[in-house]
Amino acid sequence: MDVQTILISFIISIAVIYTVYKFISLSKERQVENIKQWLIFACLEAEKMLGSKTGKVKLRYVYDLFVSKYKFISCLIPFDTFSKWVDDSLIDMRNMINTNKAIKKIVEGVD
Image (cartoon, rainbow, N blue to C red; front, side, top):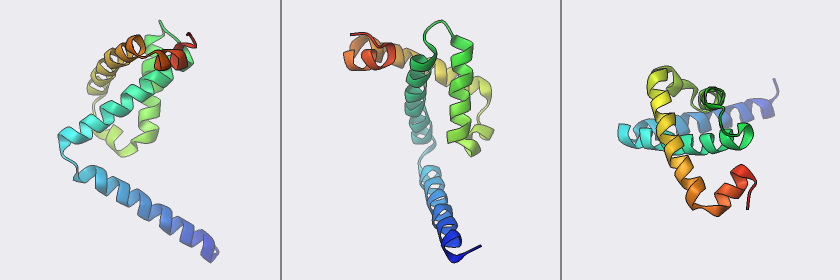
């Protein structure tokens, strides 16, 4: 390996460690809140991509996104808890779609 590759690997490692440290240093309530906020985004993405009436497929899509984003945390959270958080996020997502025309347009492609 050359020096540049080693340096880039080192910088990426430091960034990952710092991000994990910042997340772990948050209170448990704040960690869960951050994840739930991210889940709203993931649910919006799933809704946009897959449309309505695709519940289990959307849940799987959101779970796959979650595992890729939060590998370590996904090992600690039971799927039932994750599924409950997604259900809560879907309620928030539907509320956002119904009350915000810009979000509705992005997700549904409707004016």
